[in-house]
Amino acid sequence: MSGPFGLPLALLTDSYKASHAAVFPSALSATAYAEFRQPFNNDPSDHRMVFYGLQYIITTYVSRIWTDTDVDTAKAFFSTHNAGHSAFPFPETLFRKFVRENNGHFPIRIYAMREGSVVYPHTPVMQISARDEYAGLVTYLESVLLMMWYPSAVATLSRKAHTRIKERYSQSVDDSAMWTLESRMHDFGFRACTCVEQSMLGGAAHLLTFAGSDTMSAAYYVQHVLNGGRPVATSVPATEHSVMTAYQSERQAVMRVLDEYGKGVVACVLDSYDYARALRDVLPIVAERQVRDGGVFVIRPDSGDQVEAVLMGLQAADKVFGSTLNSKGYKVIRNASVIQGDGVTLDSLVRILDAVLNAGFSAECVGFGMGGGLLQKLDRDMMGMAVKLSSITYEDGQTRDIMKFPKQGSSKVSLPGKFSVHADATQNGAPVAYRASHAPSDPDLLQLVYDCGPVPGHTWDSFDAVRARLDDQWTRFPKIARAVSDDLLDYQKLIHDRQEQRVNDGSAFA
Image 1: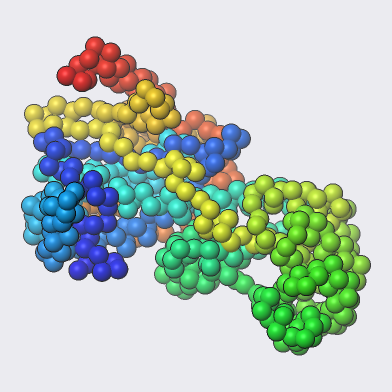
Image 2: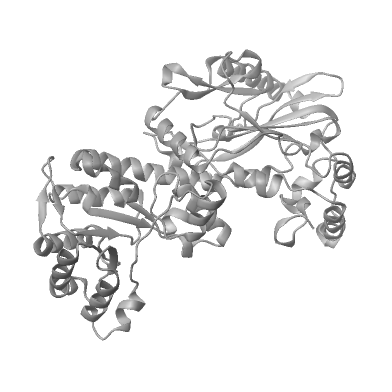
């Protein structure tokens, strides 16, 4: 079989998708599109989101070559998949046709925004089309394509964290130390993931913004698969509670760690027994060694009140390591800092940083780690990613542009027609969707990434290039933008009014 994990490729969708081709209207073509319906966590003040992860889905799943064995194995599965373990309908004839006539490539065409693009609610981030007898398969791979909601959500979360940290950096950190910003949020999420693949995709999305990561699956994938061997992620030696408690005393544990790693950056968890006492009794010994050897000691609390634990660490470090006052009037501790990785969220990150600045310390004195909050505590509804049919051309040549407008769910209204997306100079280049037939003459931001098979000559951007695109666009684009052109909104209203009339007069149900 050609699919991953021993699965036939036909099963990389939801069950009901297999029943759709048989009941889809005969058509010359069909078009669907993908969008995020709402900003991350419905943030009213910042609608920017990151589109990321399509490369992995296209290369790992969509571009795989189907074989008759895939169809045979799927047929055996479907034979008992219906209610009562009876046969479930699936488009066997169509599958065998493209296996035979299209070298096993799934017969759809996909246009998409480039990886790392900053988008807004209702930006068409993908456009999918299928022709002739395959029109009914236009959304067959919707489910697997939608899985890019996950890396997009992680990438957006990390960027939002970066925005919050950068604001405090601008207030309290000298220009000469701004380079430390990309290490201020560390990925602790490997163990929080449900599988290695999730850690790799989510961890890569985080690395679009930050460089700190303990998720080596993602670090390797980014460096050696996406970036031509050029490294992005870094980490430092650090202890866990099992190391600290394996010694008779925390002092012994810390001294052994300093013997091995004291000349560089090393992090130690200090709350195995009594965090306050460890700061009082162990930290002064550490300071002697670190100042002598020139290393940096990172204090890690892992329990208690998040804000209080960070401030306790900073104040204790200031007392024994000392600090300097930077040009902005904030203390920078010598040879030491604190990292908070216990249950960090976007909200708690802000509370901690504001408390740190209010206590007179520079934001560079504290770093953060996120585990489950970064790679696990997300879902598709956080940005409302969806795929909807938007246009169909029937066998008689009549084209019907389609939109969904559930009376009881206005948040799920979709856009009608075929689209192109263009940079809007009046919004610093932010993307705006147009009707394809009424688009500006400048280049369409939706690029062909799959054309009933791999696109000849197409190459995916390096990870460095994707990082640079995200950094540029997130900095340049407004927090809230007009994402749909007036012409397309007017057209949406026209189609809505027509369809609403059919609903009201009953012809939509006849």
